[in-house]
Amino acid sequence: MVSNVQTPAVPASAPMFGRTFLWSCLLIAVLLALPLVAPRYWVYFAGILGINIIATHGLNIMTGYTGLLSLGHAAFVGVGAYTVALAQLHLGLPFYIAIPLAGCAAAVIGIGFGLPSLRIRGLYLVIATLAAQFILNFVFVHWQSVTKGDVGLTVQPATVFGFPLNNETRVYYLILFCLVVATWFAVNVIRSRVGRAFIAIRERDLTAEVLGVQIVWYKLVAFALGSFYAGVAGGLLAYFNQFVNPEQFGLLLSVFFLSAVIVGGMGSTLGAVLGAIFMTLLPEFLREGALAVGGTFGFDIASILVPLREAVFGLLMVAFLILEPRGLAQLWKRARTRFSRSDNVA
Image 1 (cartoon, rainbow, N blue to C red):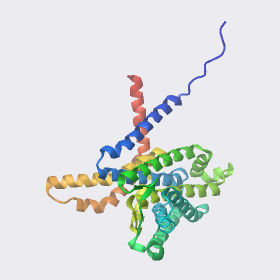
Image 2: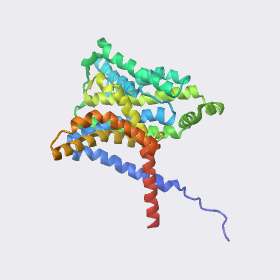
Image 3: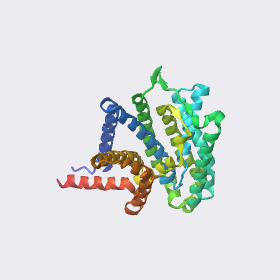
Image 4: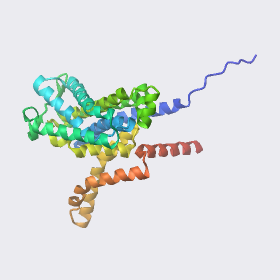
């Protein structure tokens, strides 16, 4: 007697999920072992890279997924950094309270400056967020009774069970933990109903409103989430550098984060990671290349390339917008697809 019961088919995505999980675990293992084998400078560089990725995740939620262009992201990073410094100086809060508090403070400020997004969009919203950048930077510099102005604030090392995180390697592990949690949360929030609402607003907000999406609420949620990420990144930066100064959060840093989102691929979590890596490594490659060329030909080309750094960023943004609007994430997907096809053929 032949049974009509059919064996459930295994979802096609199961092997891909298992492969992705395996590669993720391998990557985390490599990152955990990095301080054991890498020079101290590269550990410091990896810490800065992790902070940049967290901040870029936040801007990607606002700009990449929701379509809310922002040029004030560095200011929200600064809010997080100053919140950690002041919370430690006046309240003596431990890092596991100070860092979430930094994210919440930046989120509140972000919602305040995100209110114009309820009525304006496009270039006008860019101008509004640019105003936030200048206003907050003005506060950092001139509210000297609180921020100490250009002198800045000193941040004491974070401690874990009485163990001080007083060097780059120890803070690196704190940054790595926050980075893994932040990336995991960013992936899952985009897969949720909230993420689908973000994408609907980005594609066509009026149509999304007709379909029942509360665009006012979700725009403010996007600003809150993006600013929260920036605040957490700022808090980690304060512990990492053990110093907070207004010069760390200028307009060029906001341009840097926007460049990372565009180059990596707007509306892609992987793109945020790749974009932050690319834009963080680019100055190092330029510097090393300049030193190599200067050593070969006997002149200092670095003095020429360093002022051109911002011009290089601008040219890269234009090039990616023209040649590959979906950024490095799309290039990675194409390479992975070709690799998978070659494996199947073999």
